[in-house]
Length: 146
Image 1 (cartoon, rainbow, N blue to C red):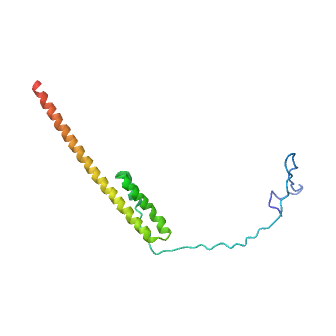
Image 2 (tube, rainbow, N blue to C red):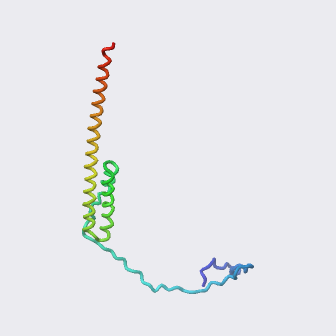
Image 3 (spheres, rainbow, N blue to C red):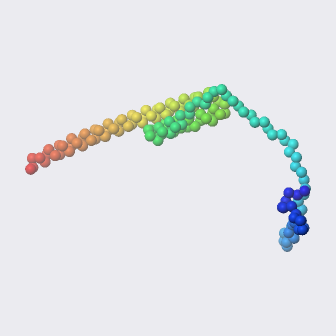
């Protein structure tokens, strides 16, 4: 039995291959064989743990990287991405350490970001106050010319 082509229809002869062409080797007729699968499917191994995956703090790490201080935020993202792979490979302690490191570096980024924002706001206030004082001093100089 061949599994090639459609079965012959009534009133039509079975299909044969094309006639050999010049310069090309003749077509070989397909050999009939049966394949037996002697391999048994491997059983699926399911590993269940009673522990819950530690928080990876990935969203927190991404937000502080974008909004606060990117150099330490990148370190937080690296540790946050390690949590899931370590936990799924069975390294629970490593996953917990990576989670703690991701949280620590995220908090460091947040702290540096808050400090930088406060410093910038103070500089802006000093700049505006200095500019206002200079403008008032400039205006006072020209009041006597009227």
